[in-house]
Length: 191
Image 1 (cartoon, helix red, strand yellow):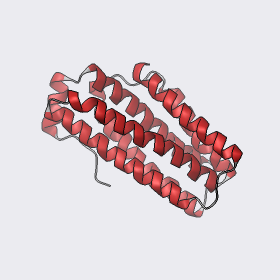
Image 2 (image 1 turned 30 degrees about the vertical axis):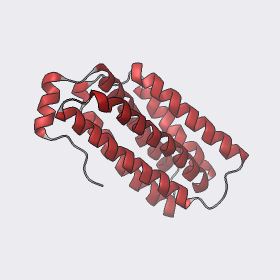
Image 3 (image 1 turned 90 degrees about the vertical axis):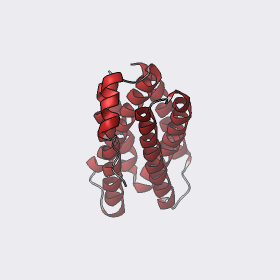
């Protein structure tokens, strides 16, 4: 995975002139989302998984941590969500609870989360593209796209590892996770 970063020239431009209100909102909610994602994998790891699930969680945690570092580099452009403690807790529980029930529950959960995140990044990119007049804003969008592609890889990896069809309880959980992710985005944009 290539390192996500904005070059010094573009970073200086962002420091001097900032970003539009919509860019600010999208950076805030993406930062909140990547914070939650890191905590999903920490929740999984808190159950002390072994073997395949341990490797999966560690690899994906590394990718999500890289995304979070990228958004933290840009914090001079936006105010972080006031709800970060809640996003950490929600992320932790989103990883911890299915991990108690086993790796298939984790994989179904990650597939659901990453399916939502892929769609969300696509919507962000399309919504911000008309406003990206400066090279620094275009650089941010390029990094959004790299994050999106990483999330697609996480989704596909989780989907490929599933060996059974989810039962009714797991399907209900997955719908709850998807709905919660959507609500979290709306809240994080503002609060």
